[in-house]
Image: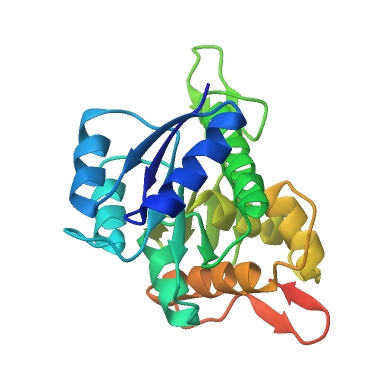
Length: 239
């Protein structure tokens, strides 16, 4: 049973999420401030965190930042703010997904399922699963990479090397770069990118894709002047 922490100061919203997830079979714990959320994260393990952005005590972005320094847990951020810059900042801090308030509880449930499934896949791959890893006769992991010009994607550590510098990626960012680096020069539609990176049906999540692409570009810009992910207007994106 997956254990989920809900950090939301609105009693009604927190309760609604808790009830809905509990009915789906999840073990839910509620926190009502950023301070309480941090304390619970320090003293217990969770499979996923649903985090409100505006919290009393410690704000949501600080909760996310502090947790990311110690743990790699999927975060779904809830916010009344819909500005692209804020979303990019959150994803840069390590958020896996976001939802703008007000939201439909069914959509939140679907996003929770996607993040938990992706986390499970990444954990399996990181511990010798069938995806990308190999071993020698002594049991050591054989390094496997996808390389393109200044870019090198390590299939074992799930990290991106840009011009000799390691870039940390979220699960979806990694899958997007894996898709591009396996097929350099090929144009992928938003539909194809979403279904590959999220392992789910595309339901018009344009903003989610744009924010993740923007976040990857921002991370790579720190180490290269080249713009590797190209927007092909009316069609999609390509490397």
